[in-house]
Amino acid sequence: MNAPHKDAKFGHTDRYGLSRGPVATEPMVSAEYFQQEKEKIFRKTWLNMLRRGAEIPKPGDFFVRDIEMLGISVIVVRGDDGRIRAFHNSCTHRGNKLVHSDGKAACDSAKGFGCGFHGWTFNNQGELAYVPDEEQFFDLDKKSLGLNEITCELWRDVIFVNLHPQEAPSLEASLGHLATTLAPFPFDEMICAGRYRVTGQANWKITMNAFQEGYHVVWVHGRSFPDAFTGADNPYCHIEHVDLDDQGNQTLSVPGAPDHEPSPTEALVFKFGATFSQGVSARDTYAGTNPGKVKDWGFDLNIIFPFSRLNVGAGWYYSDAFWPVAHDKTVYELAYYFPRPRNAGEMICQEYSKVLLRDSAREDLSTNEATHKSLAAGAIKQVMFSDQEVACRHLYAKVDEKVTG
Image 1 (cartoon, rainbow, N blue to C red):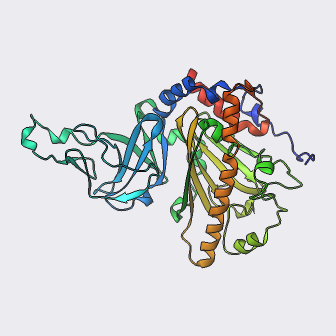
Image 2 (image 1 turned 120 degrees about the vertical axis):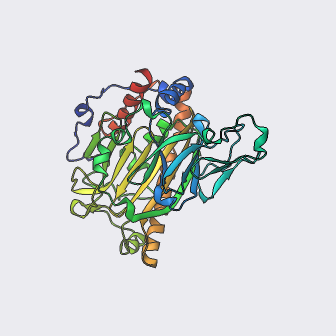
Image 3 (image 1 turned 90 degrees about the horizontal axis):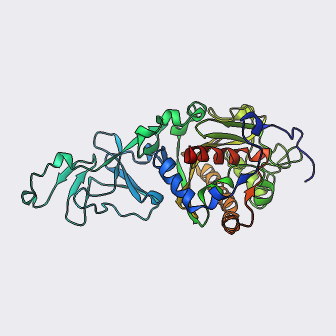
């Protein structure tokens, strides 16, 4: 493992004008800093709901997303007019929660939403439709008592909400370079093939950092894909193409290993379709992928500031998010998308990829709780990021810009 990459110095850090120095650990573990992040970032930015409009296709189809860090529950529903809206999951009579969920944002369908406290009922466009014993209220104006709406917009059918849109750029502007890079990707050709969710006792940035670089691959992923993204020519999974923008968004093109020897299982599934571990050449990429035209390309990490991703490959994509709950607690959620399978072989291929991605995500998450405990205990006061960890450094720089102004 001592052989250097043939182009060991890419100079990502200098290219984006980032400091080469160590990064303080306090923002990674401080409860006070986290309070600032909630108010100055998460209340004022576009939040990826990890759902597409196609997943609530009919009028009345909805899901509930609990944003625990802000104490907010959101109903996202398609109205009778076909429009998708988001509302606070709170009855405008006494504030009772209308729809109780397990936090997993499962989709359902309803003609409206009735409050289990006093029976106030709202239609799927958020309008107050029925009030029991209405004549007992004083000058009740039902038109003004519909559900409190939250700004909701779709980009390439991906659903985003914003609690204070007047204090944020437009969704398109917030996506920065990703709005252009990912626009041609065939999102609409794919369906959700799997969804995973796990809670960890670690800060959201520490959790996210484990997914933001390739330096860890050879050690952390030695079981799931020991040589799919590393090889004799690139033993440390150096990232050649990096694109960071002023909004905080990031693209990293993870290399594929041209000398990867597929296992017997891989060799079988490779015959049926694209998988997560199957690197491809630049000429085989999908529209909207491999913006740097990397010769030996695996897939692209596309981080949407501050906490979610749309990672794309040749024939698949997955969307995930690192939902902050507290300064020391994060919910990681992942949804995997593939073209609708046409036969049993493609179904087997997709099931293999789902399990591989699940296992690799568990490996990525495996270091986070121990890391957080160590930093919280003050074992070290600063972390050292290499040039290959430039996305981690960039995240802390952009978060601190928002928090400290």
